[in-house]
Amino acid sequence: MRLVIQRVSEASVSIDQKVKSSIGAGMLILAGIENEDTDEDIEWLSKKVVNLRIFDDEQKVPNLSLLDTKGEILLISQFTLHAMVKKGNRPSYIKAAKPEVAIPLYEKLIEQLQRDLGKPIATGSFGAEMKVSLVNDGPFTIWIDSKRRE
Image (cartoon, rainbow, N blue to C red; front, side, top):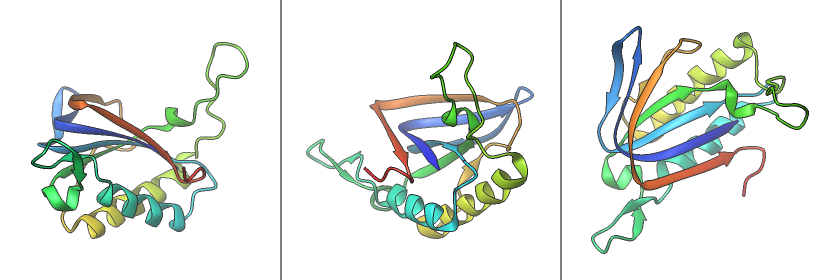
C-alpha cells in the first residue's frame, strides 16, 4: 500500500460539484492499494500516520504528531499511485488492486485510522470522480510504501 501524505491547513473533496468531506489542519492522504496488501500493511501504516511527527512545535520544529495536535485526516483512494511508466508514455495500472480487492482494504484502512486516531476521519468515495482541494502547509509531502519501509 502506498500513501502520499500532505500536511494541510485545510482540505476538501467534492463529487458532482458538492463538497463530500472537508477538514481543517491535519493530513490529506492519498492511498493506493495493490493486490498483495494485507491487514498487517494497514496496521503498520495507520500507526505510522497518526504518530508521524510532521507538525510544528512552539520552536517551529516538526516535532508533533496528529495525536499531539488533534489534527484531522482526509483519506482519498487513488489507484494511480501504482502507475508504472517504464515502457512507453501511457501509465500501466496493472499493480493497482481491482475494486473487489481494494474496497474492503480501503474500508479497513478507514476503520484502523479512526481507531488509532481516536475519532472519525473524512473520506472521498471509492471509484468516484473527485475534485480534491488543499492548502499544503509547508509544503510538506511524504510518500510511504508499506512494502518498502524506509
